[in-house]
Amino acid sequence: MTAMVDIRSVHKSFGSLEVLRGIDLEVRSGEVAVVLGPSGSGKSTLLRAINHLEKVDSGWISVGGSLVGYRRQGDRLYELRERDILKQRTRIGFVFQNFNLFPHLTVLENIVEAPVSALRRPRKEAVRAAETLLDRVGLADKAAAYPRQLSGGQQQRVAIARALALEPELLLFDEPTSALDPELVGEVLDVIKDLAHQGTTMIVVTHEIGFAREVADTVVFMDGGRIVERGTPAEVLDAPRHERTKAFLSKVL
Ligand code: ADP
Ligand code: MG
Image 1 (cartoon, rainbow, N blue to C red):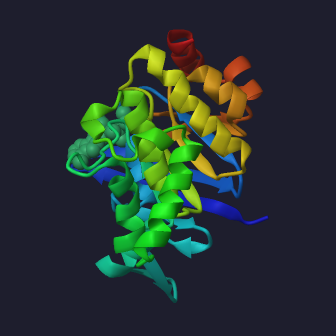
Image 2 (cartoon, protein in one colour):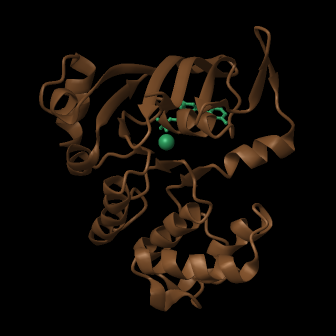
């Protein structure tokens, strides 16, 4: 089976700081990859590169068989036009640590906005789909509320519904529960677990080791801009081979 996400030899620097130092990673369709690693190891930069929110210096990334941000001509890569990059992004859902909902829009409007404006879906159809999604994340009764009227956990569940509204072939989560009070973490992880069990392809950056153990097909440990270790949850979490992985796990477990 071909990879849903294929990352090859990706390098990225900010000025003199090399943040990604040759990343190779494949995630197959329906697979859940959990990315662990200390702060500053390049996890967010990698996720942002998959969405072309961050341009890489060398290497390439493909999602669903097409290069992200570029087209290939002979052996050279040419960057796509902004319009085509935006179109590609609609195929990739991104859920941020801080929800990033539109504060001036209701919950329903937050979800309806992208399908109507980016995919030109008829409004009525988009509203119906949004209501189904809200039901799926357990917030059918919050359609008319504004983000500020919701708890952090509820806001994050709306953000997940909003990402799903574009029917993405890939979902990226960047520490989706790090900004939440501890008692709200579970409700958000439950929604993500549901998606995992339904076969959604996902890359999840998180420090929630229990979640990784339960839903990850692959656990990736990053440090210093490199993938230090990768394997099944049992391999990486229970029998890490590298000292840096062991040291990290001893701090978060
Ligand atoms: P992580 O998500 O693993 O904590 P990041 O990918 O956010 O790591 O950051 C990796 C390194 O790159 C950090 O040292 C961070 O300060 C730096 N960095 C990230 N984004 C930028 C940027 N836009 N400009 C300069 N440095 C950045
Ligand atoms: Mg980060």
